[in-house]
Length: 273
Image (cartoon, rainbow, N blue to C red; front, side, top):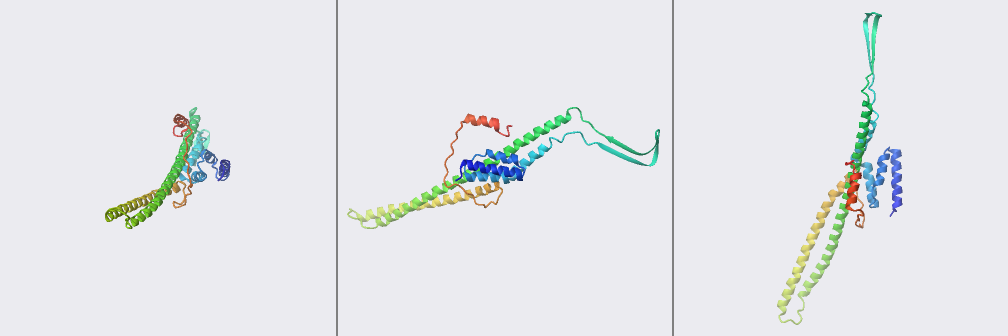
């Protein structure tokens, strides 16, 4: 297992590679804000941020809005030219051609206002890009933890199934022993029949419980499949690709209070910005 320092070093190298190769310096440095829940989850978050088409589109819209900041300016001059087949008689002499050059000048302050508007629109697109990034990372993490939950449910159900199989073997032994020697009983035949019926009832009850557990495991497996497809779609890869989940999972403890979380949302949430 890599240390936290080595993980941060790997992300920094990844950011530098994006900046040099793909020109996505801003996007790559934003990945440094990803919380490191586990090594494999961290890797999946990077894959999603690099390959998700929705996040790429949001970043492209932001880059396009940046280009519009420097666009406002003087409109292009208009040039008009005309040629006469017959010379036109003028006071200054005969005119053979006519050339006009016109330049429009906007009202004072209009260009500056347009640039300021474009700058605010670019900032809005940047916040929308951050919102898209947060939404993507949230969906990746929530799907990841939901897969872990289902994995744990399957593990527990299988453990319970193993216990029931042991109880079933014991109940069968008890059922077989009930038809054996009655020892010294006042009414041996009635005691044997009663004990045999109870043992058979226990066996049937355990078998019913086993079947319920098997159905439960099958249902959980069925619920896990669409989550696996969704997770791979968020990473923009083959929907049947294998997903590595940790064998053990420790609960996450929140170290901040409710009011601190609300203050952080007010100050940092992209849609509010």
